[in-house]
Each structure stands twice: as C-alpha cells, then as structure tokens.
Length: 485
Ligand code: HEM
Image (tube, rainbow, N blue to C red; front, side, top):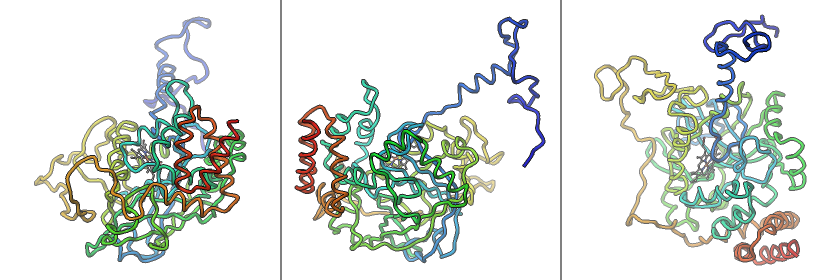
C-alpha cells in the first residue's frame, strides 16, 4: 500500500529541514547548540532502554483469543469461562528465564508461558511456565536461586559451580532438574511446547463452593524438542529462532493454539492428599485428578511494535477476576507481591495505563492518581471514596473464597503429606522416560556437572539423584567420572 510521504518532524511536531547534516559553525566548524534537532535525537536515543525483566528478559508475544469449549461453570463463576462459545481477547508472552535481553532462544532453560485474558471483569493474568513444577518451594530462596543461574560476580559468566552448588543444597530441585535435562528441556519453538499454571489456584463457583485447580495448556502443534547438539548449532546460527518462528507462523496464518485443560481437587481432599497440593515441586497424579477440558487458546496477531507491546507488557499473578483466586502455595504468595513491584520499577507506576496492560473489555475505575507519565483517565472526577458525586463504589463481593488457617506464625517449612519427600516424583519421572531419553538425560546432566570444580558438590548432587533412583544416580556418577578423568 503506497502512502503519501509526510514531512518528518521534531518531537514537538515542527518540520525537519535536514535529516542528513547537523548544523556547524561554517562548513568545517564545530557543532552548534542551536541544533536542537540533533540534540533531541541523540538525547532521545540515549534513553531508549528501560531495565530489562530481572528474569524472563528475552521473550516473544502475540495477541489472540480464548474460546470456551466445555462447561466448567460448576467449578468457577468466572464470566469469561461461563459457557461454551464465549470468546475473550488475550495477549501471550513466552520467554526463556536466565538469559538477558538478546540472549539466544534455543537454550536449555524453562520457558515462560504468560497469558493475559482481557475479560469483562478485568484482566486475568496466568503467569506460568512450560513445566508443571519448579526448582524451589519457598520464595525466600528465589533471589539466591536466580543469582546462581545468572552471571557470577567475578567471572561475569554463568558458572557450573554456582548452579550445582545451589541445587546440591536444594534437594527439592531434583524433580525440576530431571525435567529440565530431559528431552523437553529445549523446545523446538514456543509453538511446540505445553504451558502450565504450575501453581495450584482456587476456583469458586456461583454458590460459593471452592475447588483447587491446576492449569495445563496442551499444544495443538505437537511437542517438538531440540537435542543439546541441535540447539547449540541453532543458537549460534539464529539466536532469534523462537521469535522468528512465532512471528512467521502468525504472519503465514498458521498461528499456534493450545487446548486448556484443568485438574480439579475438591477443597476437602487437600488436607489428606498424598502430596502437599500447594508444593510447587510436585505434580498431582492424573489418575487421582484427571484432565478436564476447558477451551482453546489461539494466537493470530503479531504486535505491531515489540517494545511497546512485548517489552512493556506487565503480567501479574495477582491479577485475578471474580471466581479465581490464589492458593496458600508459598511461592505463589511471594509472587503476588513480586510482579507489580517489578513493574513499578521497570515501567513506572502508570504501566497499567499502557494499551497492552490496560483492561480492554472492562474499565479501570479507582482513585489511583498522578505519578510519572499519568494520563489520569479519571479526568476531573473526585479522587476519593466514598464520595457523593457519583464516584465508583465497592462491590461487597469478594473475588474468591477464604481459606482455613491454623497454628502459630513462624518460619515453617511447607508441611509434608504422607508420600512427600523431595525425591519420589523425580524418581517416578526418571522411570517414566524411555531408555534412550534416560541416556540423553544422564549425558546432559553429566556434561554440565563435570564442569564443577569441587568433588564435594558433585558428590552431594549425585546423592540426590541416587535418592530419586539408584540406577539414575549410579549412571550419573559413572558418566561424570568418565568426563572428569
Ligand atoms: C517466588 C518466586 C518467583 C519470583 C519472586 C518471581 C519474580 C519474577 C519477576 C520479578 C519477574 C519480572 C516481571 C517483570 O519485570 O515484568 C518475573 C517474570 C516471570 N516469571 Fe517469575 N518469579 C517467581 C517464580 C516464578 C514461577 C514459579 C513461574 C512459573 C510458574 C514464573 C514465571 C514467570 C514468567 C512467565 C515471567 C515473565 C512474564 C512476562 O512474560 O512478562 N515465575 N518473575
């Protein structure tokens, strides 16, 4: 489509006469301070970067829709899930975790799977990963864990010593580490992986009955992964492989989709379930709680501007809508604080007014005001509540149900249920893998673990894998020994 060229302007809209030559004192002289166009352009350029996300910095986003395909209204009163056929606009962002902005996509790392549902009752953000579990179960450990994944303060590189030292002291990580070093540890693209809410959340129906729920997005493209060797080659040849794949697929009209299923646990069963249902390092057995279909997530529109819409996207696990709420999972509780705090730092207090973050199907009405870059959509309206001038008022209806608590306050570890230990599910996962995947798993772990400089760390790590499954640990010990010989 040809467009009539328009005059280039300054930030204030005045025409630019020359965009090739800056102003000088005479043809060969120094620059002039009156060349405000040059100064504005250079100063503006210096300010193009904002702080990147402290984790999940590298990612790709797209718009689409969520369509309900099965009736789940007996479990939740959430309006956007109320009946088959109901459609809700979404924005999704996928990411790697440890790499900085600009890092290669084809790496062994969990993938973020964040979905913002623009519902008529406000935005609902489900901020998960492509793994049903996580490395730790207490948010107090998160900054330390991430420090070990990022660059060492002295060497400036990721260090095997730090990664494995932390995991050697965190037996609860052995399940997720087994997952990460298995075949699904390097997805071929964002389209070819599943997504999970990972945490347990609460659903509440119209009668006020509560359920515990886990979300599973099953890829309709099929699971496809890269081997360590193929990924190393691709990461060098095309560091933007995931980004390119997603943009191209959507541009070609082949946007990806996922079928959303949930596991539902009646609240009364939580206390006696064999695993602590709020422990993020554990899954719920699908035999105990089978998958129930909910709907389909489809992505079909690329953002026009990656910075405005992807870099500035703000997903917040604390953004709930009526009928959905948090569980007592300590990790989730920590996250309920962390994200909005990160957004206020990274984007500013008015980030919720940016088009990608603002509600699309609802209106934000409150008395939050001012701050940097405020557009103050409230305009001249009174900025306090209660007021006698027609201002918005509280609904009186809590979004989710309350939970029973008991016992003294204190630094309690997550309670262990009958079959809970840190190893049982890691061993199950290992034994579930086909023989050839077990070989690749052991080789992948050994290749990294062999780089550790201290035997005590290696021994401690091997001990955890041995506790998960004797054969797993023995094979790992032998493989590391061979590589270190
Ligand atoms: C206590 C544990 C955790 C803390 C404190 C934490 C904190 C953070 C922070 C500060 C960000 C950057 C947010 C931003 O600047 O926009 C982030 C991003 C993210 N986190 Fe977490 N995180 C935790 C655990 C998890 C877990 C368990 C998952 C998955 C189940 C997860 C998934 C994500 C995703 C997908 C993003 C990127 C969101 C986006 O695309 O913008 N995080 N996290």
